Image (cartoon, rainbow over all chains, first blue to last red; front, side, top):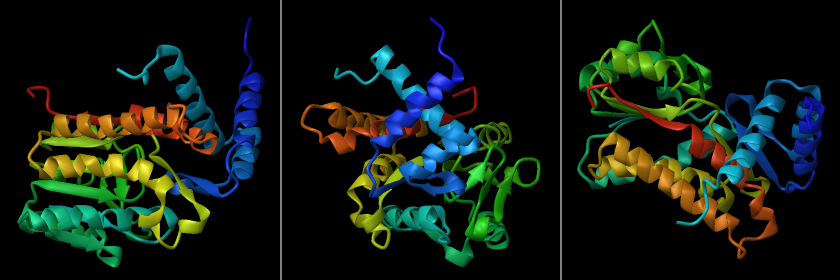
Length: 71
Length: 209
């Protein structure tokens, strides 16, 4: 089964929809973003959107590799 | 120790206040601290203080990119192929985005003792209600305490690579705490961002080390 870029964007958007409304993610000089703002950036596929996708994918990869399982 | 801590937006405001802990510890340990805060975090003053004091430890807080770290109002303090030689002889911790990608390696080549930084964006999460009091922000604390640990360990005499390791262990403890069943559902959403900083914080040293 192949996973398309759109599948990945939709997965990330689904995860962002559950993000708290009273928190913001600071991404360097790009600024601070609410979940709704990040969803728009992911849809636009701009630099901030791409960074957020990478953050989520790297986390999923770390789960697969068991990097943070208790010693 | 030379520390830069601009304060001109939300992110730098957080780093500005969380750096107070580092300044206090350095002073407590009898270290001379050159605190380039706010407007003093400018290229002229930075160059002057580095040249005069030749600090063993330089801590940057602020923004940056692959090739540079910046100060107040995003004025460039150090840039590859312009003045990265200023870092010669110092251990550097750059709490800024991406500078371990190009600036760090170049600095190490010209004699920077070690360069700890991030090869991607440094990210953290904050609470809207705590923006005016960053030190009370328990969410941001999960990110900024482990990053502070780099400098705390250096000040305690640990090597750069050991200090980086201790910082990453602090990140790992926070990640594992949030992964545990006792963690609230809302806090689980922070884990990907902590994993990101953990994965992209690197310690660059000369090959002989």
